[in-house]
Length: 113
Ligand code: SF4
Ligand code: SF4
Image (cartoon, rainbow, N blue to C red; front, side):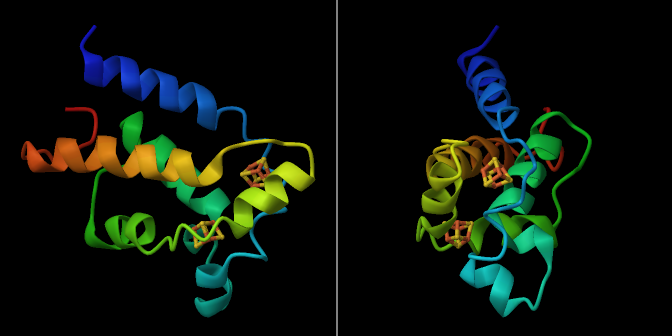
């Protein structure tokens, strides 16, 4: 197993702790600015990262924009922790960006490559 594969598996394991409660959705400023597009919330971004990493989705401009439009403001994380879910949401999104951008830089449009 490569370092990249291990990092992917570890990130997927962390994302799997998300309980899909969606408490983080309404507080997200980019979700608010999008007038309710869940892909622009913390929950939506974690799902996008999961599906890109497990190969269910392939990169496109819209998904890339969803990931990189996160402001890293931590409002989602404060809400998640206040509800006892305790995910380091910003860190997970940041790890997803780094992992996926590395794969993109190596020329793949499909994150599993
Ligand atoms: S609040 Fe936390 S556990 Fe709930 S959906 Fe958002 S990231 Fe997942
Ligand atoms: S850190 Fe990103 S996902 Fe979380 S509330 Fe801020 S903009 Fe939304």
